[in-house]
Length: 229
Image (tube, rainbow, N blue to C red; front, side):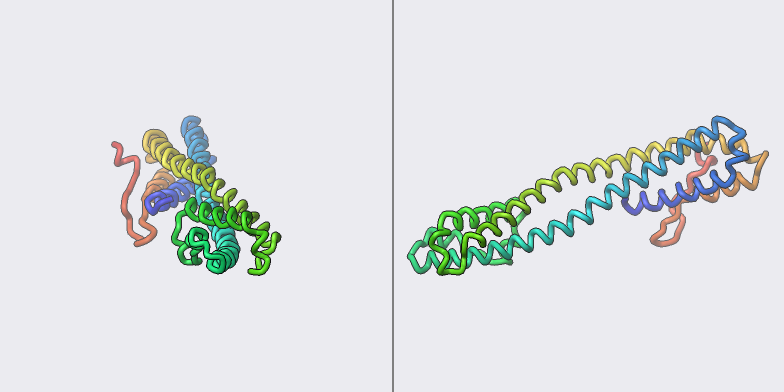
């Protein structure tokens, strides 16, 4: 949620709290009871979409950082051995391909990083028979292979997760629009019936319908039945 949506959600929750507290009275008007049920469902749907939005963002980020660091470390170690091997054997082409550092890799995009590490892996697999004297045994290359494969799988996953997160973000907008429409065109109108019959309930409802800027603790907008009159 953005700041505006957070402020609006706080208003929704406050409004729903008032409606629930006066359920017995308000349910005497079937159309109002139906609107309250619809609004409650929308508030719950907004909360669920927000949880999806937040979960994908934080969990994947932590995993990605871990996998990226492990792959870079394994790649740099193998690249260093290949670099010295190329220098000793006067292989300038190979030497130029493996002259990498952790900082240069960290500046790359996900795809560039995966490709750079994949290249070092392929070169290591080609020269593995000559790298024992440089500290790179077949099991070291196998470890690098696993790190590259794990990272490749992980950066493929965010594409699906980003879609899911994006869908949640788009769905949030739709749900907020639906909730606003329901409040303004149904609940606000029907609550006017309470103005004479139950003035205390009506005034409490209007107070809950005020949107407060939680950052500054100032009222930024008031959406009540009277604004639509």
